[in-house]
Every structure is written in structure tokens, then in C-alpha cells.
Length: 506
Image (cartoon, rainbow, N blue to C red; front, top):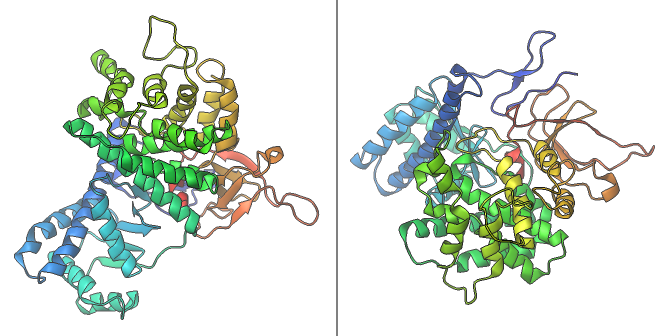
């Protein structure tokens, strides 16, 4: 059976006999060699343009509520929006979708910064009010179309009109090149998953705010972060899988903020396995949340440099553990600086065999917090895309590489416990089932003696065609004959085949 090369941005079309299933793409990035630095830059720019488009659409809707559609206040946002659409939709329509309160440019997750969160939330609320699943813009959109679209969007009352009414009104007004989508069927998140997402966002916002204040030299208070972590601890024992699933929401543009929250979640899950009581688990989570605070002292041009670092730049990067200790010492609301916070900042790159950094001329016993952070930090860093490394490493491959270093770089006992957190077949992995279907791993196996049989969601049919409403399956379940209903044939490298599994966790 040939491998399914999948990219959820477009349907999969069959190539000539003997060729593997490939994606039929007609995008800007098709013109540039895959894996090249130029391609990476284009991908990054497209995401940035998508973020700007969301911002401008939000401005249009807000302006329409305040002014008439012919008001000159529309002129600048209309002009900017048309330029963005023209660029993004040059060879196929551009689609902005909302899924469980997250925005996507086509199938690419758009992650808002703490500063952009309010604008994104307002736009999402506007779409949700009308039960709009997505807005499609074609390159033929004109100024008149955007004005009429925004005006109809805010003048019709969604309490008394349906999405179909809105679509009919747009047609009546002669709006061309703008189409509204019905909500698509995705994983139906419950209250627990929604709560996990909300607490993840709160923690990311706290990190973003504190990082910005450090850069600006402002007064620091970590009360918001402390509250966010305590809320996460309360949820950890109830639904750990939902929390760990959110660590798949990775994006190189917001790497530092999301990485900090992901490391906190992974560290707390590992601490939970190691027997940490609830209070100490919260302390561990806070320590992990601020482990990279030293990066706030490093110039942005170094942090965001896409190419190789010079020796001076590497020296600056390697200084962030010590800078982190100094920045944490400025936090208000800490009567006695917790040793775990200092250890997390100072030790997380040391490695258990002291082969990492910072290098010390005196004997140093690495704390348990430091050893936990080394594992959580490395796992999330390797499975994330970065400014200088757009292609992440798959969760399964990452776990394999890290296990090879157990006893040297990583504590061997903690590594074994970490495997029980993310699973032998890690959360977020893409697998092929014996039915020919592809599935995403949602949570580890329930029983230790069936560790290779996790809980999955089917995401394609046997031919490799993506499906939105595939079932969630417990692979440890058996039929009446005592046989497993489905089994994993092999792992599929979702990073190599451009399959974004993040959408199945929001």
C-alpha cells in the first residue's frame, strides 16, 4: 500500500498508477522548491498576511457599525484589505475559517499574540454570531463588494435572520467574490476541552504580557500567571489528555509564548507521574512557565533570525539561563524566590551529564525541577517549528531520539515516566491503520499493557481522502470474536507529509 501524502489544505488526488498519493497544490508556495529557505520565508509571509487580513476584516466590521458604508473612514481599511486579498488569492481563493474559537488561513492555524487577542476574539465572535464557518475571498473582489459585505453583516439582525438570509442579502446587493461557508464538522469538543483551551490561552497571555514588560523595563507581577497555573493544576487530574493535546498548537511565529505554556503542561504531567502533591505541582508549573524568561533580555533580531547565528549571537542566546534568574528576581508577588523557579531558568539547558550550558567551574547538583524541565523543554522544542527551522520533528521520532540519550542528557527514570505521559505512540502522531485509514493520536492508551493502542481520530478514508467527521476510536477495543477492531500498521511522519494535526485538538 502506498503512503498517503496528505495536506489538509486541499483534497488528495490520485497520481498516475505506480505513483504515491500526492497533494494537488496551486498555491504561491508551489512556485518555490519545497524545503528551501526561500519557501520557508514565503510560508512565513503568507501567515503574516493572513494575520493582517483578519485584523483588517475586524476593522471593517467595527467601522461599519460606527459609520455608513460610504463614509471615508472605510477608504484606508478597504484599500488595505483589497491589497491583502489580491496577494493571498493570486492563484486560488483565500479562506478564513473559524473552528472552536480558533482561526485558520485555509488549514493553517493563525495564532494571535497577546496584543492581537482582543481583535481576533471580536472577529471570531462576529462569525460565531452568524454561525459562519468561514469566509472565502476571490481575487475579483472589489471595493464595493467589501463595503456591501460589511454593511450587510452588521445591519441584519442574527437573532431574527439565518446565515442563509445573510447569503441571500449579499446576493441581492450584488456582492461578488465573497462566499460564506457553513461550519465544518470537526472533533466535537466538550466542556472539559473548552476549559482546557481557555486555561491554555490565559497562561499564554500571562507569559506574553510579562515578557513584554521585561523588554520595556516595566513593573512585573505574576498574579495572572499564578492563577492560570493553579486553574491548570485543578484540571490536570480530571483531563490530562485534553491539556497535553493542546501542546500540539505550535507555531514558530509565537514560539516563545506557546513553548513556555507547553513546557509547563508537559512538566506538570511529568511531575504528576513523579508523585508531586498538588501545591508543589503548581510551583513546578510556574517554574516551567517562566523558564525562558531570560530570552526577554535578548534582542529580537537575534531571537527572530532565520539564518545561522554568529558566535557572538550564540553567546547571547546561551546567556538566557542566567538572564532568566535575574529577570525572575524582579517579579512582584514573590516573598521568597522559589528555588524551583531559579532552577528551571538556570538548569534547563545543562543536560544531566553537564554537556550543555551554562558551563560551571564548580560542582553542581542538578535539581529534580531542572531534570524535569530538560525533558519537557527539549521535547516541545524539537516538535515545534522555529524561525530558523521551519520543519519540526515528528513526536514519535523526537521521543526516539530523546530515549537514545536517556542516562546522558536526560534522567533515565524521568524519561520512562515521560513516555507514559505522551504515550509510546505520542499524542499528535499520525498513524496508518490496518483499514488503510489515517488517524491522529488524541490520547495515550488507557492500559499500560496495551501501550501501543492509543485513542485516535480517523481523519481520512482508506483511499487517503480527508474526512471531517471521522470517528474517535479506542484501539484497545475488541469485537465479539476477541479480535482488535483496528490496529496501527505504521507511524506516518506528519511533518514530512505536511499534515497539520493541531486542528484536531482545538
